[in-house]
Structures are given as structure tokens and as C-alpha cells.
Amino acid sequence: MAKKLTVGFGLAVIAVAFTAVNLRAGISSLAPVIGQVADSFGVSNSTAGILTSLPGFCFAIMGWSAVPIARRLGLSPTLVAGSVALLVGLAIRPFVNSYWPFLLLTVLLIAGIAVANILLPAWVKEHSQGTHQVRLMMIYTATLGASGAVGPLSALLFSGSSAWRWSLGVWVVPVVVQVVVWTIVLSRTKKDV
Image 1 (cartoon, rainbow, N blue to C red):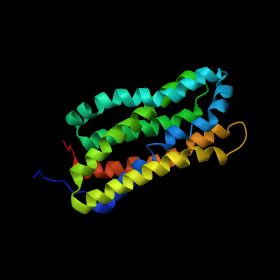
Image 2 (image 1 turned 135 degrees about the vertical axis):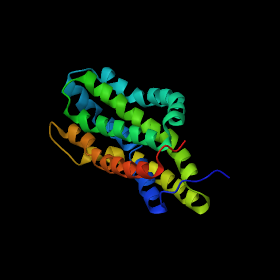
Image 3 (image 1 turned 30 degrees about the vertical axis):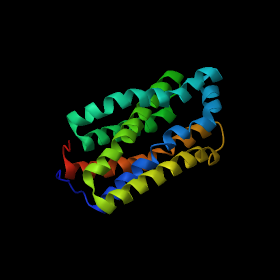
């Protein structure tokens, strides 16, 4: 049996839960405000609609590259890198004032999401066994579903001309926690290939 590196079940739960929360909300929060984004940047709805096609495109590319990257760097380091990409994309995106930087930051954050989406189940299998593994996968699956459902609700929390910026930017808060937690995890797992 392969040696399992332990990070502690409590830390693993926090890492898995916060990552799963962030795997959909950063994407699903965009759909309700896409018209406001288009108006703010002065682009057509069809041009802004390109943003809605990015997840499939980025997931396909990262599907090919995430595993080779993780084999080279390790699961935890790659998950940290994906978390940082997500954080940078979410943190800067609400502050840009033109469409193309917004699009590039959206690609960056979706790439970060795609990395975690692909590698987190593998990380769970590497760092847990038995009932702990089952519980972590249950937490992952349940939180992932909830994330997709609550992401669009952030649009209801804000009003005014910059409401879309707030409704997208609010999701940076759980990602900050995700980055901090994965940094702690990385300090314990090191290069876990």
C-alpha cells in the first residue's frame, strides 16, 4: 500500500470544503450580471457572451495539462498555484475598466478553478483512507453543488451602477481562506507526487 501523507482530518475538511465552495461561485456569479458587465464596458451582449463559453474551453485545456503539471510539481503545490490564480482573477477582475483585461482575468480564475476541479479528488485519495476518504468526498460533492446554486445569489445583495463589481468581488473572501489553508497544507505535504 502506498504511503499516505497526513495533514489531519480537520485541516483536510477545511481545505476540501473551501475549495469546493469556490469551484462554481466564481463562474456562476457572472451570469446574472452579464448585461451590466456588457453595459459597463460598452460591448455587445454577444461579445460579453463569450465569457459564458470560457468555462468549457478552460476546463478542456486544463483537463489536458493539470495532471502533467501535478506530476511535475506535486498535487498540493499545483492546488496552491490554482488557488492563487483564482484569487488573483477574482480580486482584480472587479476593478478593471475594459473588456479584454476582464476576459483575461476570467480565463485566469477559471483555469484556477479547473485545476482544483481536476486535482482535488486525487488529493483526497492520496491523503485519506477509509471513512475519512468517504467523508471528504461527500463534503466535496455536497459543497460543490451548493456553490453552483449560491453563486448567482450574490447579484441580489447589491444595487447601483457598480453592483456587478461587488457581486463578483464578494467571492474573493472564501478564496483568501482557501489560499491560506492550502499554504498550511503545503507546509505539511511538501511535494506530494
